[in-house]
Amino acid sequence: MELYILRHGIAEPRELSARMDDSERALTREGKQKMRRIAEGMKALEYSFDIILTSPLRRAEQTASIVARVLQSQKRVKILRELAAGHSTKELVEALRQPVNSFERILLVGHEPDLSSLIVRLVTGGSDMVMTLKKGGLCKLTVTSLRQSRCAVLEWSAPPSQLVRIR
Image (cartoon, rainbow, N blue to C red):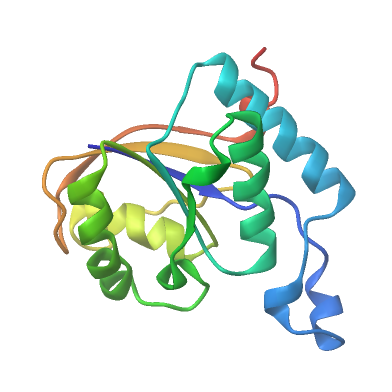
């Protein structure tokens, strides 16, 4: 199974969350434009996903929506609450069991540091690796059989600066 992991695009600054709930922080205009270019790069590479699972936080939902629109797969977007910031890696892995058994290519859209923690857990089984996804960064894992420890191979990781150049 192929598991693609995408960090949400550039969002409004955290300082705004003092005036609003952090879950409502949206992508900036620049964040939306850059995410469209990233999604166009994904389309040029002929990526497709059986399902797109997104955090319920607004910036992640917007990111998933942009990707789905460009890839013409809007009906495949589903919210997975365990992708919201602050859930444990263990909770997320448990929530992924059903989708992993049902689909061959899955895109997860979420937040740091949770996404990197998930990648490290699935690849190393612990914390033997340091990784950070930039906003709009994408990586691909090949998962043999999903479990709480070493079960995946990190195929590649691409920063947004590379993805926006693909045409």
